[in-house]
Amino acid sequence: MHHAPRLVLFALAASLAVGSTAAQELRSYGDDLSGQVSSTPLGWGFQDASAGGQHSLALRSDGTLVSWGSDQYGLITSSPFGGSYAAVSAGTFHSLALTPSGAIEAWGRDDAGQVSMAPTGTGFVDISAGGYHSLALSPSGTITAWGADDFGQVSGTPVGSGFTQISAGLLHNVALSSNGSIVAWGNDSDGQVSGAPTGSGFLQVEAGGSHCIALAADGSLVSWGKDLFGQVNLTPLDAGYVQVAAGSERSYVLRADGTIYGWGSVSPWFSTVEISTPGHTLIEAGATHLVTLFDPDCNGNGISDHTELASGASSDCNGNGVPDECDISSGQSSDLDGNGIPDDCLAPPLYSDTLALSVAFGGTQTFQLAAPAASQLYLLLGTGSGTSPGTPVPGFVLPLNLDAYLLHTLLAPNKPPLVGSFGLLAPAPGGGGQATASLILPAAFDPSLVGLTLHHAFVSLSLVGGTVTFVSNAVPLELEP
Image 1 (cartoon, rainbow, N blue to C red):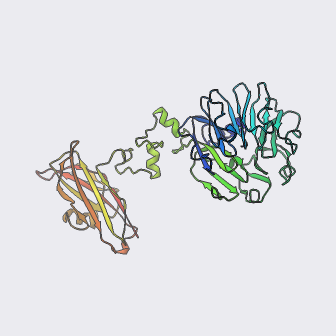
Image 2: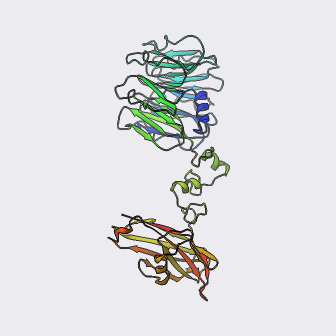
Image 3: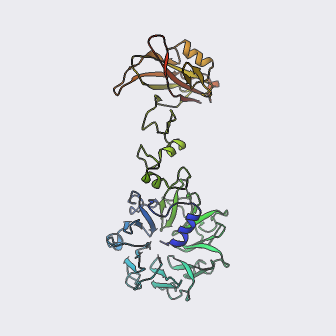
């Protein structure tokens, strides 16, 4: 609803390594009564977004516009889909778009002239759609306002130049001057105008329903205005934030790592919220929902995941939009053989259906064995003392440390807890040899073993002489309560 200044905030976000400002994904959170969350467009390639009453707007990287959510007053069907735009702003029941030449297009509810009275001409550099009025900013920093004026939200617009940011609330407005001081005007029923902080050095200010929030140079926050739902007194007192957004009765902040925190009105859609997934680069608050741009950098190398995948610098074998190395490092995918490829894409020589069993309830760990050649013997071995430095065998290093359990599995194959741990490799459909084996843990087993991690690996052996011809990776099994 209250769009932040693109150039200022995008530069700030980039300097703090929040992420790229182009070719990003849209994500929405909160109230979904009109599909403003569930209808969020999928895929990458977005550069700007804005949230309104119960609808949202976004710009693709090529400047084309997309809108979704409530179609009341033609908010969706009247959207100008054919052109190219530089910015968008969604109000309560109307929307604005800014062309690359700085011309303003408006559509939606027009009972106060918030659409038909939009200024003509070109050269505007920012727009902000409010409740029933709107604001625009010129290159020199002068502010133009139009629409409803019942609280002076239009006629009270400050004159002069040098403003760098504008934000239209429901019935009031705030603006930021070049020295970082804040000016507010319009409805002051809850101190949303008279309570504006004095001083300078603020980086961003946003108007909500009847409250405001500002971001100081040190990343700390100042809020004022209506506080019925704690949107003021619940404001975090720490610093380190890089962006703020104000909804109808809520506020949100963006951290440098791209995580989000929100507070204020508790509803069926939002209580105090922590969006802990990093990678968000822009937050825009509507009345009761939030739209964001999302561009994570899971490995922290300064290059977004999307860019890495698009350039071929990283692979995504499972097609989940996350580089394989990040799937592995986060634990989303296992890599039991350490080849850098998630096991769900390329199964390692030794693979199991579980990596943990309960000592109290027992269970079975089933192993799938794959060896380079069939018609050879296999022997599954285990250890309770780790995988490094391992145990030397002729021509190989078995990734199991020598201990009593290793000796048991070596000298008593096919004995509890292992079943099928020794036998003949059968031909595999794609070539090589294959077999299955199991570890069976009885229920109510020794509770002193809780916390122990067993590891298993197998060797293949020639039928003549029993020479080791292959050693597999190790697979863990954590013994839990």
